[in-house]
Length: 254
Length: 317
Image 1 (tube, each protein chain N blue to C red):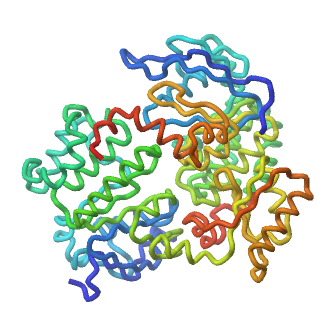
Image 2: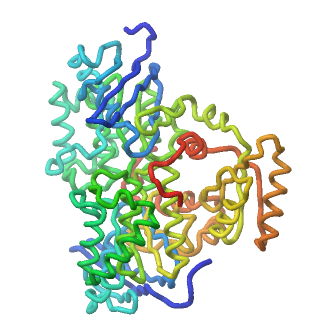
Image 3: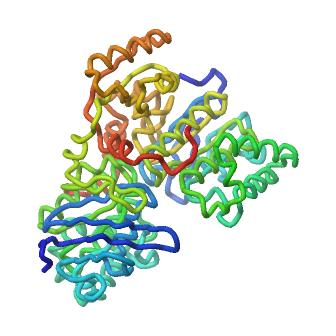
């Protein structure tokens, strides 16, 4: 079990409403430094809204949350400096080269020219991308793009990195290589919060939460949750929790 | 009808985009009433192949027949008789559920009322949301509406391109339950997916990568053909155990798989018990406590990884 006693994400009764709809309903949880935390839930369960609050893009309606020690209500700019973010859909500019993308993000995060050059070289070596440094990102395989996007999200050495479905669409070996990068990152002390629809990936996490209809329906280490629900996989835990809450599924006559 | 009698007959089809062969000499047949899965990651050629079979792309080489009609010469005959659900959400987000369905019915010169029996099983789940804009539906419901729209003209073959991608595990199960019902009604279905765990829901599957078929058979036959004893290794510190096993000179492959590691050995003539003892004592010697090692049957994903060769990345990880 990785993770230390230091709490880097703290949420208490965190809530967000849109009109009469409660997207996130009093969620309370802590994530410790150096932990790989799996943030799971069905489509529409409130994951994205919760993450947007934690990364300082959306103000909560009520409750409290601190990320890297900063208050999400008043210190969202400080939060953004201390976190990295990688989404499946948009992370890198296709029309820029690999090197240009890294330089762009380095500039955005106020790194010096020297820092950018040093970190770029180290990153390209580590990823085995030296030969592709001047290739347009559009032209490199999806698996490389994902590893590059992850590394770019770590360029400014954030304390926490948020990964939103980082492994969609790649082959199973590349997917596992990506997880080894996650392990390395966590072993080096960076906290990783990750969402995924691959239930086997949930098992790779130190702790997970499963959101159902805006609430955290389950929280803990995968092995404990499996024991608690007397099942063999997180997939089964997920199905048990998520199915009854799906209003739409309840109307299915299947 | 074609000589082999398959509902879909694909013969050495090639489709290039510039220098890339998106589909690189693929052949297979799909029989009447079969649920056939194309399984592979992005870039495998699944979407291109579906576009060729639904007459939206002309192959550069090879030929294909759908319901006995040639995909190049008889495109109109094919278009009337197939249902196609593209990978990207293809409905009108500003139209309601009912309006979308009416629109697709009218394009094919029919009405919802006439076809109700065909779509009943799925439409009954959508009907309560008739007046909701399609753009406001949840992911799982969007997929059901798209499926309904692809079925409303009573097609003889259904092509579903990654209907479950990005959909949560529960909605995915529901969707496959629907497909099983459609299959039971006699419909021939071709479906593509990047999720290896969905393979077991198909009668036969083609594992695809980079435009080629790696394996084609029933899911059971494909996993049975896995050519080495496979072991599940359980250890408290999975990542360190993985690095330790990978450093072992006899390791052939070591991969994380959910809460265990999957291990194969290079010693092909050693029996399973010997390998089991050898890796147990190796891990014990390195200080791993409470290690368990058990021989297990291979999954589709194990088979895919064994057959795919080098992954797309240069990184050895």
